[in-house]
Length: 367
Image (tube, rainbow, N blue to C red; front, top):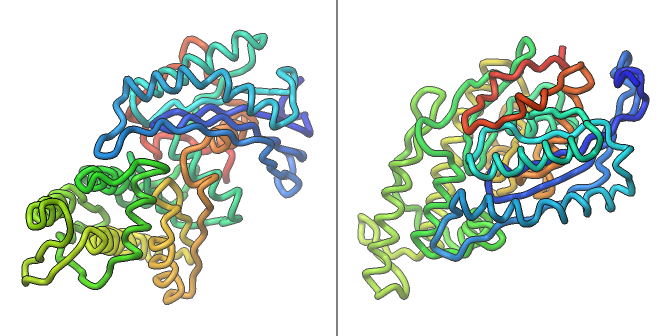
């Protein structure tokens, strides 16, 4: 049956671009010729995370092994939670990129295998960043926001125009989430449930001292590598001062703790993100900010962005960890939106790529 004539359309989405393996099922209902009648319903959203020991990061080969080991059981659970059978699925969507090569490849092969095993289901390759944006829009109801996309692998300020998500500003080196993750290793902060979350909790206990860290905004772009280097230096000095036990001393002799260092790092990098986001809002004339990506869960970032938006008479939209952190449902949703316009990924082209820019995607489903 022609997908455009179906009143109920269901997609299964597979995400595995980093250390989260997520599989979700989404339902779209309504007449595609009348978008006002169309609705989206999350039927299942299952996720399993590869957690590496404190002081370490996750290696591509280990993460890929995790995804291969858990894929079948997560897919079965997603179908069971949705109370669906294989015949109910209209298409299978997977993350084409960007991301880490080995995990992406593992999930792309698994999605391709499902499509073939399940009787030749259509495949849809999805841009990871567009998945975050479309899921954020669907959950929050933001209609024309400036998007701040902040995660372990990406930092971008985005706005929609002429069927493309245009990048107004981005990191010049490492992503803000990567900066936080790598700093967590310097303090041997646990990776469970996530290093960024644990930094956020530590930062709430700091704040007596705001340490001077490099503030690197260049036009609409940011740089985080210098901030990370300086924060790592201060962490090493703090450990050396007390044999790893307690406080250090800042440039002016002020004592500080690991919590103060976490606080200072957050305040600095988030202020940079607020600055470039506000500049983009002024440029496009938008009063809405949508924060997506794993770092978007951070309550302090949401608070700082909210204060800026309120000063401009605007508002901030964000989701909780179910949808901010990498998940399969965002891939299912964005993939189904594309599939409804006639887009498919042929089996022979169902590859993946570590570099797949947000503005490369033709957003046919938006006017």
